[in-house]
Length: 111
Length: 111
Image (cartoon, rainbow over all chains, first blue to last red; front, top):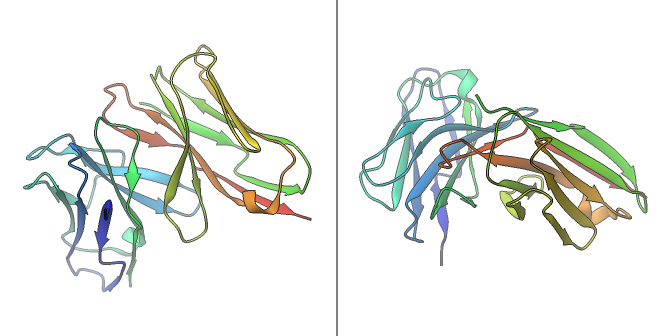
């Protein structure tokens, strides 16, 4: 079982560029999440989804958009990347809201 | 708004010593999690605490929960180098749909 798979693992963007991070889970989980991790800030919730076709804002949603068109996939989009979005992004999924199963992270650098 | 505070944020310990990490949260929650993260890795679930007075132990780590005080502790007994990592506590939001994390405690154990 793959669990939670994040694509890509690393990415470098220039300011103003756009990109999409993909999260895929094969556990038939209803809930999916995007967090960002910055030094000294812990994990902060960006957006989450409680089922196919639903999304909700987390603690730090500004500058990001998400979509959950299929139950197994949760996409995180940056329309116009900024240096403040340099971070490690973690996707997670859950059957009922907790516990969370995490992916291995995507390291994004915006120059 | 739910806030989760951990202290200390950094902890340098000698092997063989005992110490406690504290996790306070601001609003009622029905479950609390402890996670471990090794450098450059994803998060691994350690404990889930579901009720007042709950205590869980694994090896040299013991977690407890006091829901009246909104406080959880992670006690380390006779620390060893292998326990060096960052430890996060996380609490479910009021709707039970997401986990909100503390900033983490980075533990370094040296001989």
